[in-house]
Image (cartoon, rainbow, N blue to C red; front, side):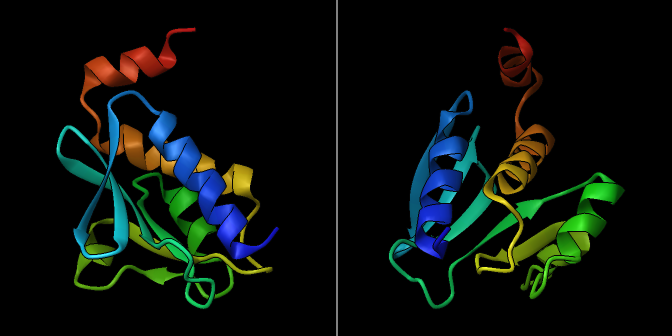
Length: 122
């Protein structure tokens, strides 16, 4: 899957979560928020060269797994100290399903309990 298709699928999934909204606080770089708090950085749409996402992973196993993706790093600007991981979307990247799992985990760290309850209700 191309980096832009992977980004589109991750974006679609992120926006399907209860209360999720997309904003562009820094020009063309997209973020997805819940309750006015960012849970996913998506970068600029159409930027295949540096396509990537950043998510907040508090679960140590998921955090370690995400950092094991080739090219993944703790997120810049000091966010890495709080559990944020930046994952490039390349041919060596994690499968989209796993990226979406990480987006959901990041959402669960940020979202209020009432919205998490909606997510958990079939």
